[in-house]
Length: 250
Image 1 (spheres, rainbow, N blue to C red):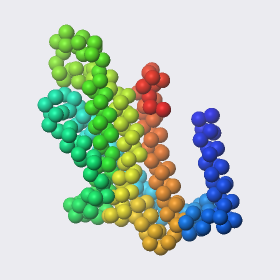
Image 2: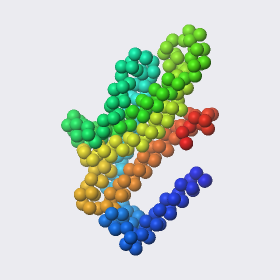
Image 3: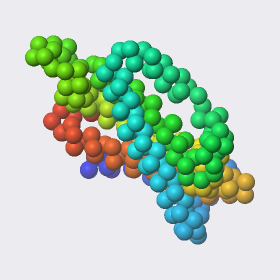
Image 4: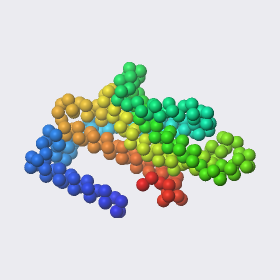
């Protein structure tokens, strides 16, 4: 109960303070709307917010799922061969340093407006943590266990799937946690360019000077990232039940 109640206390306090300051005119409503006005904005048009939330959820989930599958597969390939790792890992790092907002227009040119561009944007932003954490975990296997596998004549593929991969599971799931939040960020950026979803709603509300709808969309996007993170945390507890106290990211 403490883990549930304690984080709620600051939220309630900040919400009450913001409401009081807004009602007394300390916070200009065109810059910081009252929390009640944000709630009213959603209540007045629930269909639009529900539709855009669903669109962003779909794109983010698709981008996250693809990044988890391809990222882990690529990391296993890098861990399997030192030559492949030295050839391609620097490009993975370089790819991560390119700002997504700079290449998002190219995605629109290549993929067109709509869901494919948003999914691609979400995928690009979220794949690198999966690769980086997975490679780190796969390469940090206990040397004594590696020696034991080599002594019994295990093949490289057996070492990878029967030793390195299970041993690296905490780091892999840690990368999934990071990617969970980044997938929503990537989707929002893609929606800024291609339209639709919460990102498109934020852009439209900004042009209309509807700061209450902007805040509502941002809060929903943050909640979506929290839901993804919570889901990955459940997987973490499921797979790491016996050693989560020492390996699970708090």
